[in-house]
Length: 348
Image (cartoon, rainbow, N blue to C red; front, side, top):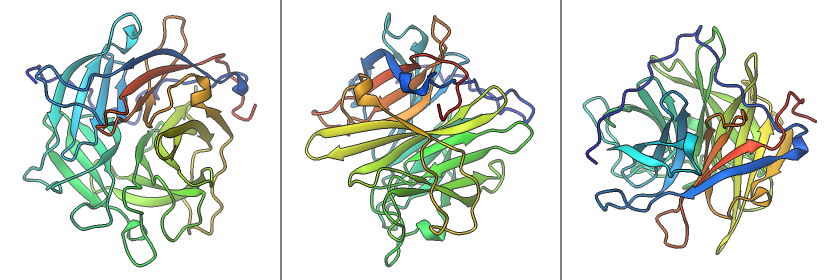
């Protein structure tokens, strides 16, 4: 697409302000309210197919929404107009195809499912297929050009083997940035469903540190998800309070073939490092909200990020569904706001 390359935010130093405060509904049972929705186009201005939006990252400066497509080669696109969504449609500004470089090589096919924009880098969780040709990886791209800078393998426990590792096409599915004042940034990565060696109803979480050098993965406490077949975790978002991180929001979904979808938002405590898995008990959600009952269409909801502050002062969340390039699905985008925001405890 013939659009100018946008300027990107520079990396934030450790003393930078914490991310925007996103209060919960108060009381929590008040839930979340859809305030604007739209379907994203299936083709760009040049007529090329567009879709498979699987992850998102919003930057309030410039009202910039970055979307990751899980097309086999993958792409990043920049959209503007969230602040006026409802009155005007979201507009695409820029798209770049993800590609190999002299620094690192992409597999012939990838499956980008998680996205964090941090300075000039786009960190992507790429889902695997239990094969050397399509490994699960953490990838770092130059956001301006789409060139691959680093390709990092997952820990041995996550690698395919006899009776262990990620299931095919079941993770890693999500990325979130954990930023604490005066401490190094950490990327949180979660599997979509349990590893083969783990009990059902829980998913593993990794914390990636040393992001400015040679990133290192460390196991964190697992998250409990509904044990019924079909449930998985599709995205994560660190929920920030007035003085620092206060919890972890997870987007959970369930697919019952052929066309029944369910979607939940769940709030968890922040997972801490653990010595052994799965012996450590998984973290239970503090509260869950049914997104379909709240008014979202029943579809394949995959992406979660913060959104702009609304005209009435409320903060918002952005959710997107992935159409899987299927004519039977859509790339829905929704803005959610707490129905009654306030300083309630997460347990109330």
